[in-house]
Image (cartoon, rainbow, N blue to C red; front, top):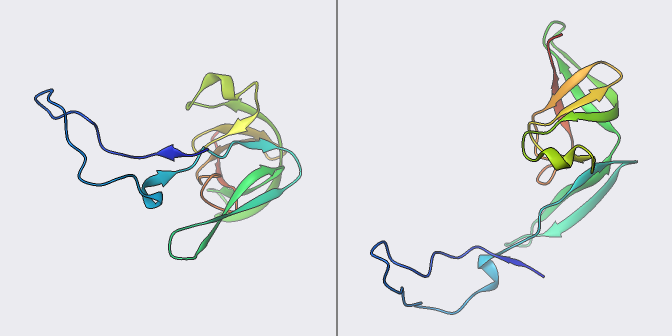
Amino acid sequence: MGVWHLRSKRKNTGGLLRRDSKSKKSQMGSLPTQTTIAPIKLKEKKTRGGSVKKTIISTDKINVFDKTKKAFKIAKIISIVKNPANPHFIRRTLMTKGAIIKTDMGNVKITSRPGQNPSLNGVLAEK
């Protein structure tokens, strides 16, 4: 199953827009990766041009940047506090960019995109 990223079938005036070519595999997207809290598990996706993109299926650790000490430290994820992308992601324990999670260091805001990067990074939130 795939997701198609095509332009609209209608013009700005409301008229029907005629397709000039058929659908191509390069126009196809993919379903979102839903990263959860569990032992680390990565998935490799083949991309256009023969490259490989790694995504995080699940993880229980995060690289936390402490602004006061100006250093990174690996912290253990306990739970999700807030997710502005979707309020239902909290009870489903899904992590996206911008989510605030509870760690053993304190609350951390996720700055990386778990569906695009093979590592999870965040910034320690002020208390």
